Length: 357
Image 1: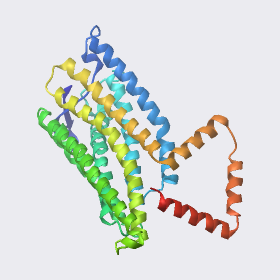
Image 2: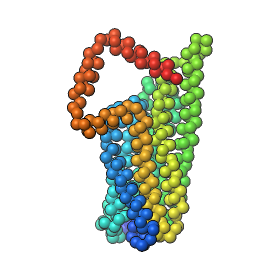
Image 3: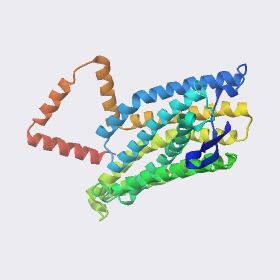
């Protein structure tokens, strides 16, 4: 519901009325259908949060060690994962207040965990939408600098994108929570998030088509009868990497769009509605947000073969409690193979990869 909170810190001369939207179970009559459905939403969301908590850290470690992606893309992705971790922490705190295990008192010093958790969580919700656009912009840079993107790291790109995520996520919530009624700010916030959803989807589609066409041109240029000066080994390799990375991004962003769009639609419709209906619908917004994060992470795991294989190996190791020594011995045996054998294997794999499709 839209709730006023008078934030007063006399020592700092701060006295401002904040507004925010939050689902509260005690705003709903216990004998209504809304009450049962809200409790059900809380239970499902808590299950999603627990699953996220279990898989997030192993996913981050595995991704950084095994994912064969450009460093800029890996940095943006890890920033995304870090935002998920903080979102989970803050969501747990808010949940304790939503089920009324703790109750806001109106005293800022006593309500500090609640107020900070809520408004910082607003930042992280916006950042999760902004990171989708950051993914697309990073791949746009890879397409523009297709000839030497792998050689020249250009780490300033990932730094600028992380700053972009933080800037958008900090500025918009100010309008969302510091307005007299909250409605104007929330509409602005929903517009920004919706624009990023639509914009990222449109841009990624255009660049995907461009990379497919470029791949076809480079494939044709290998033919001696069609040889052109456009063909370089580096460019062909970068196009292949772009397409592989785009599959990862397309799946992560694409999986989040339906739930994100539904969440934004409900949140926009919810503005100005009766108190009981607002709390009920807000539980769906929270559920769809958390569910979208979980779905995006799982789809990302399934999109990268090396990530999927490493996680499967870890799961088998945990379940069977086997020692990793055989794998180490096999690795050492491969390292001890004759140099000429390694060279032949390398060029064979490289040739197969280039001739693929």
